[in-house]
Image (tube, rainbow, N blue to C red; front, side, top):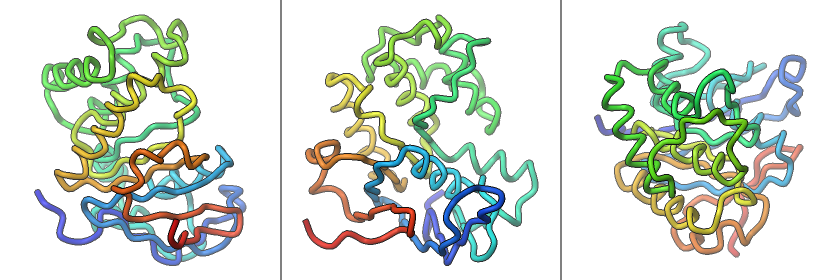
Length: 231
C-alpha cells in the first residue's frame, strides 16, 4: 500500500533528558516516500540515540514522532511490534545474539515483527545474502564472523522485508569495498518503491558517490538537527 503522507514526521520532538540522556532540544524532520536524508554526525552514540528516537524508543517531553502516520507514543505493544517490522535498521552496536546462528539473527526481526511465512523470509534473505557477497547465509554464530562479514550481514538484515523506512548508522569503515556498490543500489531500489532513507555518515567521502541522489542534507549536533545549505 502506497503511503500518501510522510513516512516519518517529527514535530518539535523534545527528548526526555532524564530517560534518554539526549539534549532536551526540539527536533523537526519530515521524510516523504523516496526521500534520502544524509545526516552528518561524528558521534556514534548521538546517532544511535537519534535513530532510537525515530523508531519510537525514546520518551518525549513534548512534541511527536509519527511513522506511517501513527504516533509512536499512542500505540500498544502489538502495534509497536508490527510497525517496527517496517523499519530496516543498521546499528553501529551490532545487536547480534551469539546464542543463535547469524542466519537466525538476520531473519529474527522479520519473524518477530511480521506474519510472513518463514520460508519466504529465508528465501529473500538468501537472495540478499548473495547480493552482498555471501555464498548463502552464514550459519555460524556472529561472534565467529569477521568484521566485514558482520557488516554484510547487517546490510542483509536491514534491507530484508522491503522496509518503508531505512535507518542506517555508519558502518562504512567495516563494509568491504565490493559490498559498497550493493549497499548504494539497495538504497536506490528501496527509494524507487517508495521507502524513505535516513543515512548517518561521519565523513564526506562516505557518501560522495551518492551525493547527486541525496535530497535532504542535515547535521546532527548536541544542539539539535540543522540543515546543511549547498555543497
